[in-house]
Length: 172
Image (tube, rainbow, N blue to C red; front, side):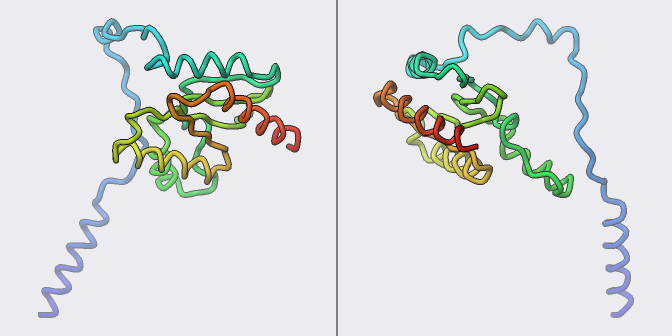
């Protein structure tokens, strides 16, 4: 009986030692025949409400701030330094392939706040989970996230947002 346990233990150890080691994924070159399969999108905005909010934000934006649209979360929020590489890479997956509808930055490019426009699609359970994840990630990183609903008074809401972040920017 002891031999069976020892053999199973040695087999498990050998399997563990022979396991593939974690490596970063490699970027593959784009085959020449695929380059023509991409097309320029007609607009960054997926609907009229996004375009309307963008236009209101641009008009309300103070000269020392800028409004960015469709900014990748990964360019704004990243796993903290000092974490194990594999763990950091796993955390990166939480922000990868996500974006902010709008990002407000200062003159130096420092992110001040993110804005999400929530329409009827955000009522689906899957969308609500994604919204909760994005909200939690922003809170954890210390980035204010404003959620506006389609149909709200964008002019009034943008004034509130810019007043709030202007006060924050003056303090920091």
